[in-house]
Image 1 (cartoon, helix red, strand yellow):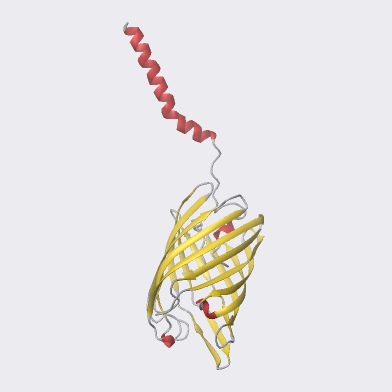
Image 2: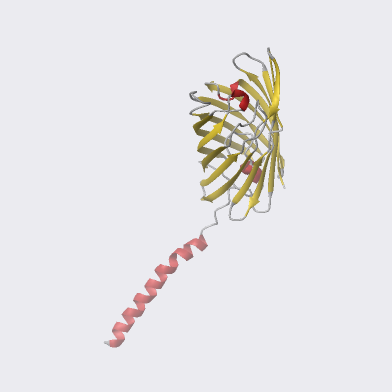
Length: 277
């Protein structure tokens, strides 16, 4: 009888051991989930430009992404045009799926019936944390700070800040959807009064990659307030990105106004590039 019960307990122990080890066995048998921010098309996933929304991917540790571009806009209201360059953004990969971002000031020049106006925008710094990924999903959070900086016509009269959450979903191996939602507090340039306002900022981006080195995108974005005491504004843009090499990207874009006066333009055209070091 003692041997009979020992045999039962031994069978029970072996069965329990098998159940406990089953997840590890299954994990070893399943193929590893590919990092959506890696591979030969990684730069297309990493870049923030030319979209207004940011990528959910953090720059890999000890790597650097540099982005730059030029934009020509046709202004609404009294008309005229505006040029914006170099649209520089530098992103530095940090440990634990973090990145440091620096947006130096842009030079802006506006032409109209009343003459020309030029100056520098404000400087922005921030940090992003990539939360993790599955086969189809990727998430990140980021915080941005804008000190009082820039010129009287295009800078920030007072300090500002923004917090964003970014969720990316891949319906297939060649398509993607990204949703960014954020809240910002910012100040107008001193020439425009320097008043502060707070805004809720949604951005939705669709991408299609027919080839490993080519990506088309379409984006709709907006702000609940475009200035102190002003209502909402929405714009859209689209374009393509092409990888010359796995470390060099070039892009072209076109943007249009949908509602309100967000950006102050009727439409714009832009070109740019991205580099991975």
